[in-house]
Length: 257
Image (cartoon, rainbow, N blue to C red; front, side, top):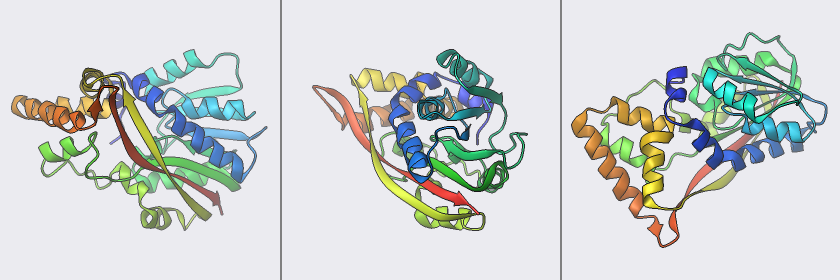
């Protein structure tokens, strides 16, 4: 599901700006489990570096990993002169030394990677007792960012896993319990805000890589239907102040055995 061509489509930095507060929640959760000051932290599927910036602010030494060179370059431009190393690599096959990190963080990143391989790499990278912290969306059939895609593409493409599976507590426990202990799941709400319906439609049609990819795989008829479905779903959350709606997410933390 996660490929460089997917994440280089559109303008991921527009997404990163929207979800930056979630990165702060992830790093806060990691820091509560074990202070990050002076710690070696790996930010997996780092995007443009939101969690990297948050970890640096807490005094960590960060290695930021992403599959997409364009996003790594944007991250480098945001962070200069700091204790950070940028690596272009698959989050599930980083090539980094085993047991070299005190903590691993990810903000809406590793959830897009094949789960078994990703969990194995997390176990490999973390020192025994190391901290894992990441965020994941919670499945919501009425979410206006996902419902139109599900409605137009029936049945939806099925890679064998979906990112929002990580928002389910039983799934988290099943996937992590062999290699991790003291698994904790915090529930949160993220509020999306756009100044107008036009602005959010620009976001889904030209900026958000996941949505841009949905339009790209649609045929002409599906593309028109998809646009109409998004306009209808998002209009329901539009008033004189713009478009605003909530999405549930979780922050998962755990200790490597």
